Image 1 (spheres, rainbow, N blue to C red):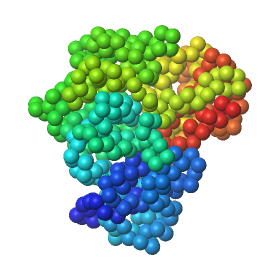
Image 2: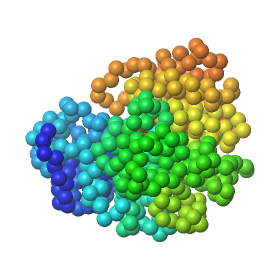
Image 3: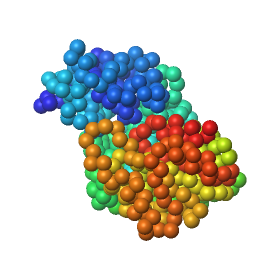
Image 4: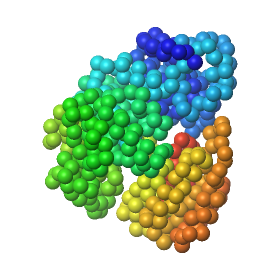
Length: 467
């Protein structure tokens, strides 16, 4: 690897290894829009479930090759861009051993420099950051501010034949982006403004996350919007020059306090700082997401009347509370990216308020390591969220290739849950078996929730359950 970091500029020839990934594809589009010559490789480039990302990139003129090293043997780009998911023996790495490399986080830091004419607004936290990044960007659009946006999900209002939805260039004053804590890469860059949603069980122990978010806050230059409970933990790290705005569902001392939430007649409404806001998405967690958006809009100088109106219009993110249809017996099917204990429990609890019947919660862990890490915390959350009539169904963990222990598996975890609970936990190893199970047992008034990260075919599964 080059000892001197490669400096990206307009005209640089960049090759993205794993360009079909949600983070990598967004960065690829960003650099293409900035005048770079972008190519990429991905081992799943021709899989139909990845077309929502791959095809818009191709229509932008980004050439995508098989990830077998052949492209790297035939040409030499100026720099390889890679993520933590790419292993050292990747064929493109092996074929391009002399080519400078940049980790995705370092490429993002350089992207912020390329977009330095806009003030950077980072959105981070354990839960909700993808939704809130999209929500904030769309709210700024609704205010006429035309931000640039880089997100870890496909934003519905930005999706088109030529834009995947996870990046959109804008000509306004702000560049809104999702800052990822999953591999600590957010510590490689800083922002003018930062929005920290929460700290929860995902990727690392809580004390590690508290330190990480504290370090990120310490580098923020102008203003911080953060959950009041996070503020209490990291306030000593926040620079004195930073303006601070807080929000909370729990603490009335917050600047944006959620006084109440209701979903009467399926119309979710929150009272935030004594003012009513009709929510575009149900759930107390989305009331808090809205409060986070409001807090940041306030920091960015949007007047409150405009902010309340702008935050009330949001078209959502692909695979976040997506309605797929109904089963043959009339059960509603939803698709969601929920993949850690807090997100899974929150989705279940929200749907319990939306339908009168049972919840069939179908979860595919996004890897064997993540399943092992969340094993105990997930059980505790589910025991508090599931009712005796509900059913929690594990699918086998997603395996994208590479090194894995293949432990623990879903059969083992489901069995361990059953051994210490009277609630319904099981593992169904095949998707065809799942379809049969759902068609036999899910009825009108019930809801089927398909949950999991990284595997785009889960949205196809949700649709198949409606046939």
